[in-house]
Image (cartoon, rainbow, N blue to C red; front, side):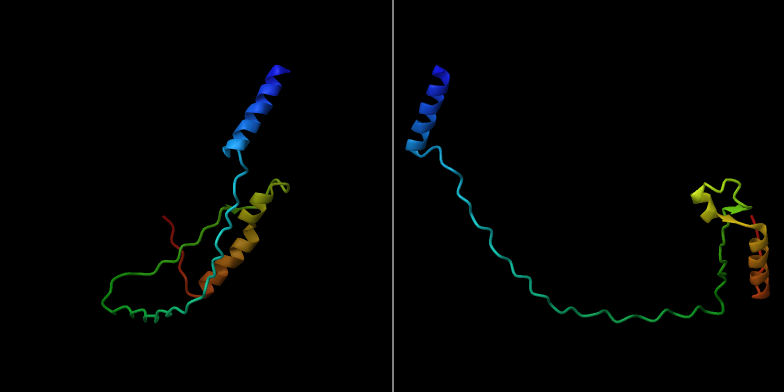
Length: 104
């Protein structure tokens, strides 16, 4: 009980001295953002390859699984599996468009 009274008196003493006051709220400044126009860069043309260039373009295709998904509850593998029949159709489309498969 005496400690509570001493604490109360101490707090009153501090408030009288001005050492115990509520913190003053300082308003934050309002910042207005003004949009500015920026120049759009002019696109540059992609240079045509020279006929003397020796580089070749090789598209890379990837199949994760060429099979039916043995576990139909495996949702992740459903999206990664290609049935053999669909795979055969895809290869025929590539062949009919002039692509030659290579593997390594």
